[in-house]
Image 1 (tube, chains in turn green, blue):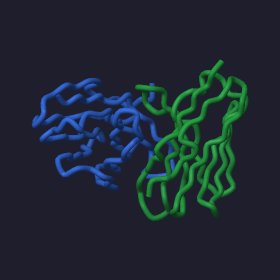
Image 2 (image 1 turned 30 degrees about the horizontal axis):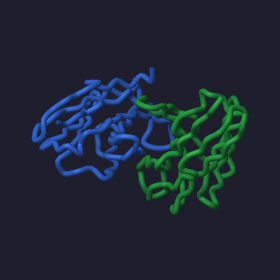
Image 3 (image 1 turned 90 degrees about the vertical axis):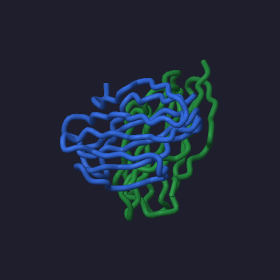
Length: 110
Length: 113
């Protein structure tokens, strides 16, 4: 049930782009994206509810491919503040659970 | 500040003991989720309540139990504690039982010695 995130870790230079993927083996109702800094609570980035939906703010955006049961998070022109662990959370159509992927650790170097 | 309050922030207790973690959801939110996060690990779903009723259960041990009260605050009870129960326990709340943003509390760090 747990969504699969890839890659497990990414190291970037400031200003580079990154893509984090999240896939599920089950039909998805929603995909949630959060960022967590070490020792802190996860912070909401965005939620996608419809297939084909794309959202974004600042230089972080995401897409949801309902047919493939996949979502991707795009970080462009990365900033030092983007460092942290990114989690995707999914709700499937058949169960009322918000289940999280294992996370993708993003390290941004100056 | 997410509006979700968890108490206590830190808890140190001995093996075999029982503790209660408390969560006050954001005003107006009906759903409460409990998660366990071990050191540098992901978020393990424990249990979800919606408007006082258990809605979903994850990999919650039998030694653990939870409830949501009429005022919507929730408590997670951990008993017969083992060293492996040491972790950060997060509570999150959301407006409905699915499809809405979940707001996380700052967590309770439990250390079992």
